[in-house]
Image (cartoon, rainbow, N blue to C red; front, top):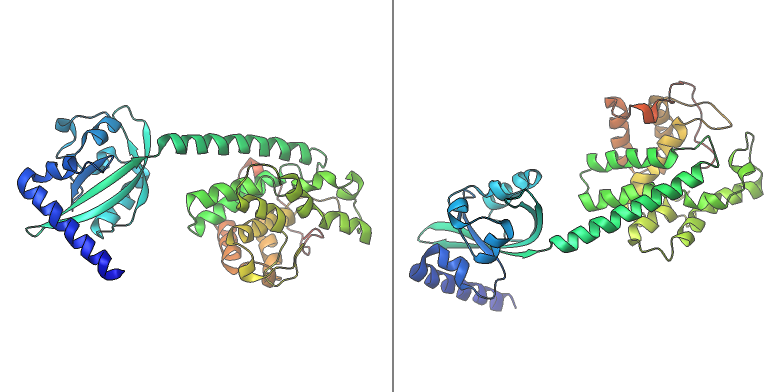
Length: 347
C-alpha cells in the first residue's frame, strides 16, 4: 500500500511539473479541474497563482493578490500557524480562516501539496469553502449557550448562596483549559458544559440545598443524584457527548472516590477533569450556608491537601491562575475571607 501511495505521489509530482513547464505556475492553479479552489504560494508565503474560485471567494483580482504575502488574506490569529506550516512544509489538511476584500471571515479546509521544480519549492493548496457550515455551527452553539444561561439562571435563583456559581465555574474552567493549550472547540464545549453542569440540582428540594447544618444520609443522596438527573434532562437535547459527560461526570475524582460511577484517571476526559477542578475551586471559595467564603489562595491550599482527587495538570494550572491574580473582578468580589475549611460536603 505504501509503495502504491509513493508511486501515485511521484506520478502526480511529474504531472504537475509537466504543467508547470508548459503553462507556468498559474497553469498549476488553473489546469487541475478536479480542484474546486486552488492557490499557489512560495516557501516565503507569497501568493504567485490562484484559480477563479479562490479569487471569487476573496473578492480580489489577480493584480491585487499576486506578489503579496498570504498573511494579507489570512485572519490575524491564524497567521503564525500558517507561517509555521509553510516553513515546516507540512502537507496535512487543516481549517483556516481567510479574510476577503470586504473584511468578512471565510472558513476553508486547506489541503497543501508541496511541489519542487528546478530546486524551487512551491505549495499548491486546494481549498474547500466551509463558511456556511461553520456559521450554522456557531449559530447553533450560540443558541445552546443562551438556553444554558437561562437554565442556569433559573436554577441558581432558587439558592442565593450559589447564584452565579456555574457562570464563575465556566470562567475558571476556560482559563485552565487555555493554560493547558486545549483547542478552541474543546474550550467552547467546556464553557457550555460548565454553564449547565449543576442543572440536575433543579430536582433537589430547596431546604436541602440551603440547609446550614450537616446533611442527613437521605439528603446527601439527593445531592449525589444531581449529575445523573442533569444528564437525563439533557438526554434529548442536541448537544455533543462531551457536554453531557461534563454534566454527568463532574464529581468523578482521579483516585476513584467520586460519583456517580467511581471513575479514575484516564477514564475521565481531561475536559471533565478541568471542570471538576474549577467547580471545586469556586465552591470552596464561595459563600455557603454552613460557612463563610475562603480566599482563592486558601482554597487552592485546601485542594492541594487532597490532591489525589484532582487531575495534577489541571490543579497546577488553577494554582497558577490564583497566584497570578487572574481570577479577579466583580464576578469574584465576594471571595475575601481567609478562614480555612475542608472540602465542601457536595464534593
